[in-house]
Image (cartoon, rainbow, N blue to C red; front, side):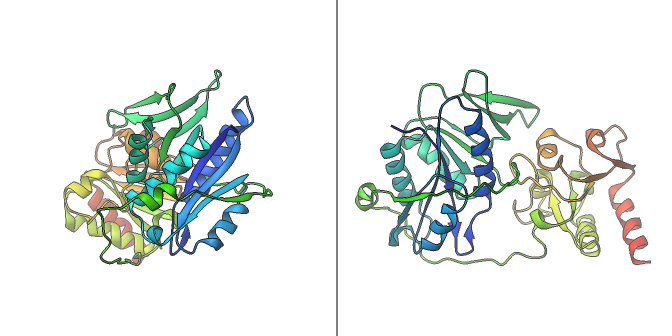
Length: 329
């Protein structure tokens, strides 16, 4: 049996999720560090995806495994896991990487249960050690500790990674082959889940992962009224607004879409402005690669200052008001 590293490609009406290319870059790095020859393969499923299969064939993989079916038109974990289980049983990949998107976070642990293997969730790094083992690095204890996870006795070794953790580098195009995954398990599967309708919500403003400037707020903002200052500043700077977990818990933002950190998103803007953020490790992991880091905190010993290029000691709301007034002047 040929040795393989598999990368799952999530797709929707907008095409392949960019996290596929980020994971593919890391997979190629892992392959180069392994002592034996491995094939790099992409796995994709859906309905009417022939154009996406062609795109993946040009991505730098050796093989594209695909499945097209009416059952796969909309994500259903029962059907998608049936296809992925078939692929795993038929081709026995040693490593399988899945993007920790809203859908991937459901698919990865489901596969772990179905094929009885380990899943390292929300990895911040993947590497091959001197013994040729896959080391899966995962934050623990609120991000204060980085643990190394090994899966020594079962295959595949499944790891999920948040979008933005790894940097995308397009690989050299190869003469990749497309292989259809057998549908035996998919055809036999009858899901109790039924999609009634699908609603798409258009993103508001500049996507955070594409913004040159990100203004991020934490618990130190104090109130929803003060939080509006972040929105105002972001508009003036043509940027986007991010948040930490406490802002969500306080109800200052409606959801986790723009949460930055190990359990949220990773960003690399040219300028990051953090207001009222303490600097917990699980947040720093999501923004430490920003170009210029400017932090505002009334605690002069705040941990965030150790990662900052510029620090402003003071009340976040008062400092933001002064910055906004200066820009408008």
